[in-house]
Image (cartoon, rainbow over all chains, first blue to last red; front, side, top):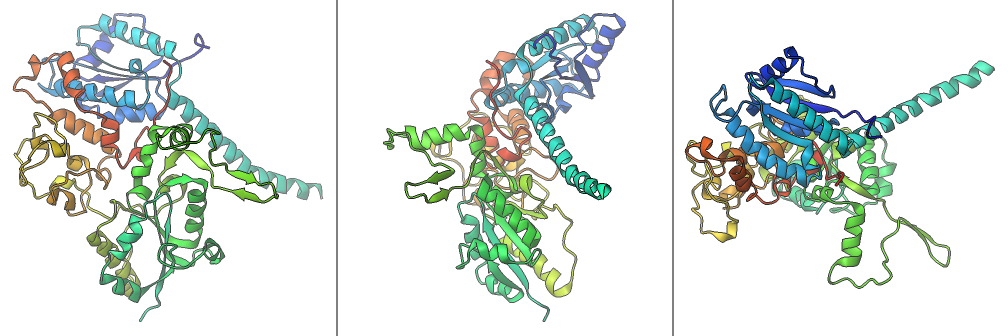
Length: 167
Length: 334
């Protein structure tokens, strides 16, 4: 199971450092595991904790926030805010029952393509080992149930139509 | 005189404080009763569930449902109310967002039953008897109890809701606002607000709060209310008391902070966000233990600082856990 398991991972990248770092990782042709999706934001501080919670709700197995190194923020102090929020959010995610390794904050500058590849590979590897997030399992079950209910709702119409056709 | 409208009050998982809030209409109760007939309210009248079921569909103009949905009985009657009422209002914090009963989403049915019926210090239950949904006694009498759910829901998780009235419980002034809306609709035919409206303000509580605050908030220490002698005029946060005002919807006239009680967040998130907990988390993390030079702080120091905020989940989602993004606590791999 763990070999086949493909995690869904959201990586929030700030526009000025980490997104450029991701770009550099690409043009440098570093091998990166493919199970992540990048969401670009103007600053890591733009990543409202609400977005992270929403990602987990929608079935993300892991969420990572990447920003400029402290002191290097394009907006001077954005990432100082980010790290404060992330510190508190980590405590709260633990209370929600999520494994601490499902959420990570890293600093990746525009020149650190290699670090981007390394950090993402590590994170994808760790989350793959952890398996599906309980919220993902739940979201998928809910969808299955809804689909089954929709199918059942469609059933009587077909069943009702069948005898008429026989007549 | 136009025809009177009809009103029903039904409770779910509720402390019945919302029924008392209706009594809090005070003398305006007569205004209410001059335009409306109360046709169903188990707290205030001698009515039976069968009476409600017997009413024709959509025969009640406005239904107020208060309380969360905790068991199968709550769910069933939420649906009955939806069928019988033209307009269904989620009245009070529990129906709006799950409220205090919603905090049960940090645990499970099993854990609650074990605690309540087996492990509390005052319990003697060697046979481990817990309530069953169905039971047939020796004489063959079958009895049933509602099914207790693993999770607590808000009203709109179960049925379509037209309007929300937040707060625990809604204040007399909020009641008057509803009364005015309803009265204008009944007597003058004025249109009702758009569906889904939360009948309160769109701003944050700080907007209504009269306490004095500096232009830039900061919080150096954290205290419980009873631990310090605080200034009765000044903002709670600046004095180190966690107040949820800055992440909470206004509309209650800040009655709590006016009487020296920090806001606990019963009005739910503001109109601009979906998550009260996330807004409060951002706000508190941004003002707590601010230093003149953030760059000097190491990440370990920040972790240590934030770990002084005990139980952020219970504190920030005190009234809104079922309506939060994640909704309830899960069990992850070790």
